[in-house]
Length: 291
Image (cartoon, rainbow, N blue to C red):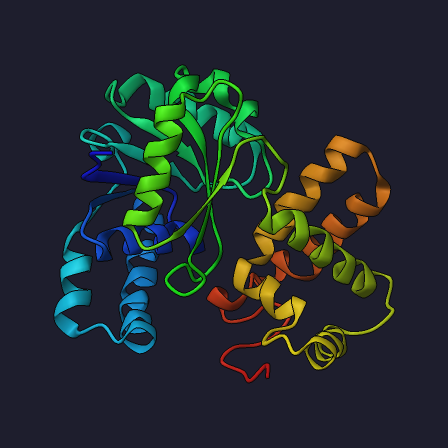
């Protein structure tokens, strides 16, 4: 592996974390998003990550500022990817948006560039053809708060070149992750194969009126010793992501229970600006103790 320049496309919760983590570990990072407003939000998120690294990793002011200074921000895709070794795609979980992005990326990315998707739920083979370079395409999935929860699931599809697979594993290690290789495609990788059905189950309890979010979280934390309940986790992940996953499942299966859950998330949370912890309110209001 000889990666030096990293582009992160998408600057939401995880995209911002991936960008800052790579920069913190010495890589030159370009953050791409579609407009200046999104870029400004990215800068705000990443500035907050500086403080988290000081608190959680005991990093110095000099270290966190040097990392931030290794990041540039751009709305022009061609400029953003001009030197990229990998492009890490962390854009919304909507198949059409991802497909169109890869088609545009193929027109401007250097031949050397490896494409990596951070998709939580889709298989890389779903987008391999759209990339135009399926041998140089695979998935790299992170857990939230990656500087602490430093797993990196590396998943190939049948057409991924093994050298590319090995290079991305080494890259994951180079940015401080514990690399977890998956040799066969699995929807949801390892982590989300466990997490998504769990979060889906608790959302269904809320939708049915079985109990409220706080009581469900309290039940889980006391019974298992977990530090966060499932609705607190959903607030960290972001309710828009939960909605996109549920809506995609509704469209794929035709199952009305997923359609009802997606509509519930949209009308009761997203339409009211309750997008999760980053927005100041989701299932909980922030700052608030959810212990």
